[in-house]
Every structure is written in C-alpha cells, then in structure tokens.
Amino acid sequence: MPEPHQECAITAPSAHAGEPPTGAGTEPAAVELRGITKRFPGVVANHDIDITVRRGTVHALVGENGAGKSTLMKILYGMQRPDEGTITVDGERAELHTPADAIARGIGMVHQHFMLADNLTVLENVVLGAEKLHGIGGRARARIKEISDAYGLDVRPDALVEHLGVADRQRIEILKVLYRGARILILDEPTAVLVPQEVDALFGNLRELKSEGLTVIFISHKLDEVLSVADAITVIRRGTTVASVDPHEVNARRLAELMVGSELPSPETRESTVTEVPLLTVDGLRLCETDPDGVERTVLDGIGFTIHKGEILGIAGVEGNGQAELVEAIMGMRKPDAGVVTLDGSDITGLLTRARREAGIGYIPEDRHRHALLLEAPLWENRILGHVTEEPNSRRGILNPAAARKDTERIVAEYDVRTPGIDVTASSLSGGNQQKLIVGREMSHHPKLLIAAHPTRGVDVGAQAQIWDHIRQARREGLAVLLISADLDELIGLSDTLRVMYRGRLVADVDPATVTPEELGSAMTGAASGSLASPADAGSGTTDSASTTDSASTSDEPRAAEQAGE
Ligand SMILES: Nc1ncnc2c1ncn2[C@@H]1O[C@H](COP(=O)(O)OP(=O)(O)OP(=O)(O)O)[C@@H](O)[C@H]1O
Image (cartoon, rainbow, N blue to C red; front, side):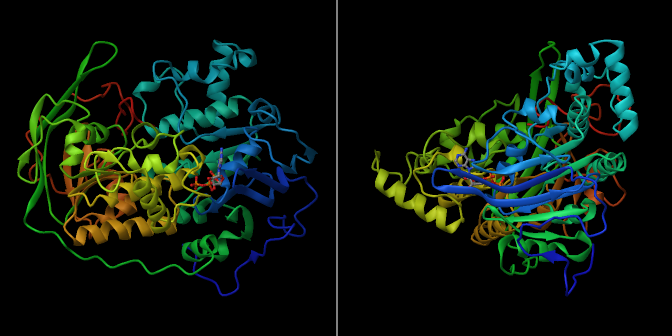
C-alpha cells in the first residue's frame, strides 16, 4: 500500500476536478460530467458534480453511504435524469434518457445484483436481448470467444450458469456488456462478493480492458482495493465532488478521512470476552433439497457448533456453500431433515421464526430487501417490522406508534442513518443507510444471539467501524454472534472463533489472530492449507457429501448453489 504523503496530489473541489494532467494530449475524455445536480424530495443527491474520466483508465468513485455515487452512475447509465448539468461522451454531448441510449453511446453497467438466468447457458444469457448483433449460433459463439480471449475473461459459452460461482457470473456480466459494444464500463461494488484471489483476477481483467483502450468506472467501499487498481479516484461527500486524488499519493486512511471530512478513530485492539456459557448449540444439522431437475442434494451436512455468551463465531465461505441455508434453518425459515438447535438451554428446533425472535434472536439477513425491509413503508414502520409485539413498539399488546416513531428518531441519530426524516420510505434510502437502519433495529432489542449475515455489506468505512463498535460493545455485555460475511477483514477482525464452510460442511477451524485473508480465501475455495485445522465438532459429514457439485468441474472454485450472487 502506498505510504502516506504530506503533500497529497488532491485537487480541491473545482470545475476542474479530475481533469487530465497538463500535457496529456488533446484526446477527448471518455466521460465528462459537468454541473450534475439531482434532487429527490428532501434530498439533494448530487450537487454540481464535475468529473472527467480519461479514456483507457480505471476511475474509482468513493464516498460515504448516501454520498450520491449510485445516483450519479444511474444518471450516466440513463436510468435517471439529472435536474441540471451536462454529460459528454467521447467529446460529444449525450442525452441519456434510457439505458438503451447509454448502450448506444458505448456505456455498459454491471450491477451488484447479477441479472443472469440460471437455467440458461452462458451463450444464451449473453445473446438474450441482443440477438440482432450476431445471431444466436456460431457467429455469437465466435464473438463471445473472441471477447473472452481478448480480455482474459475465461468464459465457456456452453456452461450452464447455475453451475457457476460468483466470480464466473461476474465475468459473464462483464462479457455481456462488452458484447453489446460497451467501451465504458460502470461496475457497482464489483468486489463485494469476491474472495481475495478472485479480486486479483478481476483486477487483472480490468487492466486488460484498459490496455485495450476501454474505460472502467467503479464504485467501491474497499479503499485498499481502490488504491491498488485505480488510476484516478474521485471522492464524493454529501452529494458533491470534494477531491480528485492520485492513488499513488494517498493511503486508505487519508482517503477515508476525505470521505467523511474528519479524522477517523483508530481501530480497536483485539480483546476476548468469550465465556464458558453456551448460548447457541447446533447439533447434527442436516438439510436436503430437491432441485428443479428432481435431483436430491444435501445442502447442510452434519453441521455442529456452539457459540458461547460473549463470543462471535465467524463462518467463512464462498457464497452458495450452505451459509444462507444454515442461517435460515437457525431462524426457523427452513425445516432441517435432522438436527437440534438449542438457545440458552431450550430446544428451539420446532419453533416458528417469530417465536425464535421473541426468545432473543436478532437477525440481520443477507437479502435486506426480501427479509428485512418493507421498501414502500416509512422508516418508522420498518422499525417495527419483526418486533411488533415488543417494547417500545407496543405495550400490553397494543401498538404504540408514538413510541415507535420516537425510537426510530433515536436509531437514525445513533446509527447515523442519513435521511430527511422518518416518514420517507425505506426505498428512498441509499443501500448503506438501509443497512444501518436494520442493524440499529436489531441491536435495539438487546438480543441474546445476533445472526448477522453480511452486516456491513454496502456500508462505508466510517459506518462500518461504528457497526463493529456496536457489536463489540454488545458482545462485552454477553451477546453471542453468528457472523457470516464475504468481507474477510471483517470476519478476521471481529471473530473469536472462525470456521470455514465448504459444500455444506464445516471443513476447517482457523485462528482469527493469525490467519491472513489470502489463507482464508484459499481455505474457502476448498484448497485446505497446512496451517488450518480440521473442525473440532463439525459433525459427522461423510467425505462424499452430496454437494451441488458437478463432477466435470475443471475449476478450483466450488459450484455455487442457486443463491450465489443473491
Ligand atoms: N429514488 C430515490 N428517492 C428519494 N431519495 C433517493 C432516491 N435515490 C437516492 N436517494 C437519496 O439520494 C442520496 C444519495 O443516494 P445514493 O444511493 O446515490 O448514495 P450512494 O453514495 O450510492 O450510497 P451507498 O454507498 O449507501 O450505496 C441518499 O440520501 C438517498 O437517500
């Protein structure tokens, strides 16, 4: 990582933020955004934004949750119209009313949530909706091969998407936009779901793209990664460009400070609060599912562990290896075929989800839109969601909206949820602010056990540190936590005990005090390292556990189950 520098090459906010350096030639910029302003009711999402993105570069956009990054990219991709400002693409004014306009101007976007049909092949997915370009047969296949080879994407046209892991799916999405002729690619938090080795491979692809003269604009909260791959960084704070930064001249801490506009607290040192009192015990959990082809597969195979009061148990794994099903089985959302779940001495295996919550489980789900929010309801109603019978939301069985509203105001302040008020809908919050609201709600009920699936996904570094502090503080008071995360720094930094899940089984114990993200990443892809121990009490799964795998696999990567990529 670059060393901190006294005199950083940071330009103040100005009409020239992000301009090419003098002498860079007269070639038009790939994208010029000038004076972009976008207002929503009660919020100015973008205010007089100026950015110049040079052709053939990787340009990162960073900023706190709600800073306005996604809004800006939606404007560039024609999904939203700016109230003011101009867009110039390759030196020509562009009016981008729809994504089709953007695609016609050579702009493509890869969204965080992949949009691939699982039951189709790669080729079918790529040509879908673009049949006119090269047909659906040999010409299309040849073109896919050509693009794949040119940028090192390693895409196999006949593979069935449901058999592919997250990183493969992402490369298909990239190929899809290249197939449609994109020369400017927008990537929204592309590394959020990747393990370190996959991130390196993606960055290799991005370097290939830029060496061929393509331009990449990407949003990320992972500042170390931004520094390692970007040629230019624009920092957005509260809707406006505050700095244009040369990545060689700053470190991650300085970048974070530019984002938040003040100095960050130092990270806390490791402390142990683990007691000997078991809080959650999972024993011999087994879950089988029949897939659409009628084939039965074992999704959870003899899972067993104990989490004590004051302990955070982290589970690492590439998405799609059974973590989501494990969480849902513990929450009572899926019925296991075998196994017992005990909470604080009581068998809760047969309880409904609501009863489990009432017994003291807080739940931060993986998919916040499906399982944690009513997007079209106001924030204060979302504060009640899942806790309708509890104080302060209701008293002696009667709903108390005034108290719920007041407590929502408290959560908004305490968790720094950036919103014009508690009456706006959850859908109008930025992704990171939605997440802060959910974490605040779940922590407010002082659970005994917190099931936290990707608790800081999409959250900026400042808010992430705050959420970690809240969790650590509650752990000190005896909270037990089951932590599932794709963020390996988070897993290593927060967990007292760390296990690796692979193809439905717990396959290794890892010491969070010594393991590196690279070692953990290897263990997650099934390449067990010598320094990793076998799990002590991971149940009695057999070696040929019926996983989702396709034995014809040539890749090291596990075949992800259907929820990979969410
Ligand atoms: N459709 C909308 N209606 C109302 N307000 C919106 C809408 N979309 C975004 N906003 C508001 O605009 C601001 C910027 O949101 P945006 O999603 O662009 O932020 P972001 O920088 O991408 O955040 P994050 O890192 O959390 O994804 C936020 O205050 C958000 O609440």
